[in-house]
Image 1 (tube, rainbow, N blue to C red):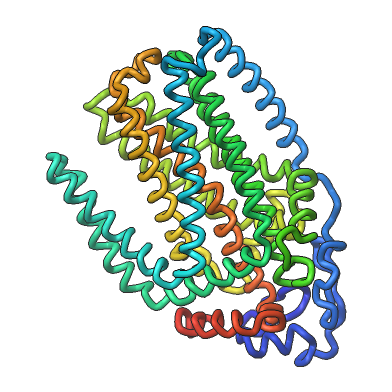
Image 2 (cartoon, rainbow, N blue to C red):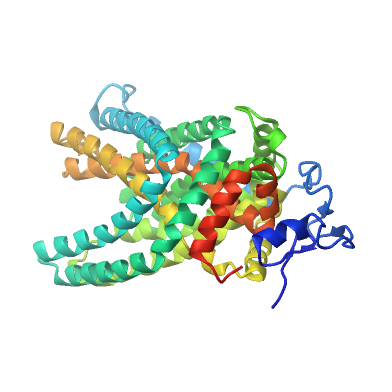
Amino acid sequence: MTIPIVQGVAISHSPETAYATYHGEASSDADPLHRKDGIFLDNNDNVQVLEERRPRKFQDVGWAIAFYIHLAFMLVFLFIGIANRGDGNWTQGGSHGAIIWLVTICGLAGIVMATLALSIMFQHADTLVQMALVFSVLTSLAIGILGFVTGSILMGVLGLLSFAVGICYARLVWNRLAFAAANLKTALVAVKANLGVLVLAYAMTGLAFAWTLLWMLGLGSSMEDNNAAFVFFLFLSFYWVHQVLSNTVHCTTSGIVGSWWFVPEEANSFCSSALTDSFVRTTTYSFGSVCFGSFLVAIVQALRALEYYSRDNDELQFLSCIIQCLLSCIQSIIEEITKFAYVYVGLYGFSFLDAGRNVIELFQQRGWTVIITDDLADNVLFMMSVAVGLATGLIGLFFGLFDSSMFADFGIDDAAGAAFGIGFLVGFSFASVIFAVVASAMNTVIVCYCEAPAELERHYPDLSANMRASWTQAWPDLF
């Protein structure tokens, strides 16, 4: 059996013996080692000066420059579009005024609902993990029934097939729900110890709100352009900015949780030094890495949006569905890799590619590749985001039914459908930015538990006991 090397120290496959080995009690002759990332660790002083050992080096600078150039171009383009298509009073009426009210109301409602959802998650982690799994299974059943009701036999068959597979999957992973809940609880405790990070999430939500509003108002008839490349660029810009905002929260939270894990005294207040230091590192030294990874995900999102936007041939609906499915799978793979890469970017300040390579090597050495593919806790965040999106979508639907001509200036006759789509997009996007705090905290907990389970036992014995007990239940043979 291969003994993994974690932070320069050989770790056994048992959490109990790992604690002793990690602190030198079972390996007294272990010398301090130098990892290739430049961090020195020994058995007695285990990452007590974590912040000082993070390299102060700008990473992926070219991607940061590209993002700023693109953003400057888009801002000029959007403001010119607003000036050319408005009448000087576009905030007072017409389609522009209706969109402003729609996005504003849906955005504010989304923020309130997402905040309430955070409070619910703090209190009912175990129940929500179970509900999320059941929700994913029942969603497939609902899609199948809807397919048969609407006469789409293929959608009905696929939905029922997915429902059957979902039932089997639920039975297979049911014993893992306790660990998913333990992971969620540990992440929530870390976030509660540093609630100032929610202010950052709200600030990024505000920027996302402003960007969405500006993007929608500034385009006008540009989306009717027959140049697919130009329309793709518009979608790419929209999603790239949103991804950068979301991943800025991700990396900042990872740095905070890392400090909370290794150096609790630096991350135990509303506006802790870990929060300010992590945010500064993310927006300066690591901002290029944030832009790089965000660009990869935004490309796939833009392709999916372009395919959906240009869908106008009923005979090719099946092919379009296949393309959407393939793009969705590609997006999921990229997001799975980037979310753990960003943990290392936030923890250690690596470049994006180095972070991805290092975190993959870590999980491979530990034999944890099966664990990182478990999205049971992430399902809770997705369920909550969908719930917020549907709620704000209903608000948008009400706007559309009340004013059937609200999109007349853009040549859109189905005001109710368009308003529901905009409301859902706004609510889902804003909720996703806020829930990125919890998501990144959960991912960081997994990485830190893989690297240094002894530190959790040392600083938070109750949480460690819960993680260990649920781990033994879920994967009794892995350690």
